[in-house]
Image (tube, rainbow, N blue to C red; front, side, top):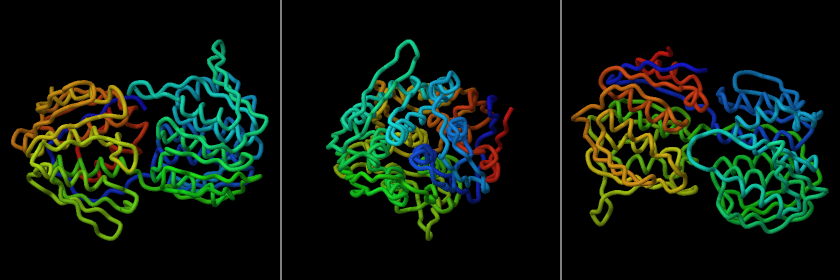
Length: 435
């Protein structure tokens, strides 16, 4: 969906909002349906571009797909069409979607071969796929880059369990290697594994399908290979990045918002980091209440020095929410240093916030110092373009808090990650329309 959002900001919002199913979990779980010829039913699937595109790719692959209801699908991969993998269509479809890299592990493990077009996706610097391929090779696959065809190719007569040390705790890399190890001969141990809730969810589904994975939630996963996997059911967690976004939205617009069914025990330090910015967050059963505040004050560190917020692999703070933290800090009382360690070029969108009146010093491509305006000078409306999914949402929040009219172009970047976002914001009283 191309187009732009027209936003009239500066309004207080009110009401409740339910987070969508987690995008990053959905991409992993959908790839896992290829590991069995039996039915796998998945619920709470978000209706967003990246996920729908992956479902289409599975369909083109010959997976039979039944829609049982909103966000509720059954997949059966009993007649997979392998020629599709080498086709021009897959090159086009697969290259447009980073998540399709996680089809490699299941295909390699079940069919002994896998292909992948060279990837496209977000503009957040180089995202290396070395970790994935290194893991497959360790388990016994032969890896080739077919330059003239623009394809990566993997082949394996059989995969054998092994101790694999990942050079980075890559979430998609961990998912891929776990899926390929489930059907390998013998025992695989993956050390420096990503331990995000989404990886834990994937492992829980695989265990329900008959896999034998232990160490869930830790950075050392042990997988005893099994002969085959069967069907199972799975419900996706709510999207923690969306939950963080709504916390930020409430603070910036000084609104009272209830976020429904957040799965508190899976949120890690996210609520704590927002509380450090002075935001009042209450827990009511499994709902999160953000109280309306005229001002919120950034806490200093224990020794009185300026607060630093940086991203780190789980259970550290997710890099996907740093752009939201940055926007929220622009209207706090106090100063904070944001240090973006895990990706390159994710902070370049701050220029747009500076144009809107935010007081930000971009120290280098990885660090920005924000001096909060304490809601005394509202941001000014502006014409903006969304560079990637997460910055797009951060700019949206800035625009909703700004005085006057803003236009955000390139909103397919926002639609890639957030379902029906304009409609859901209107239900809280926001003035936002698609043009």
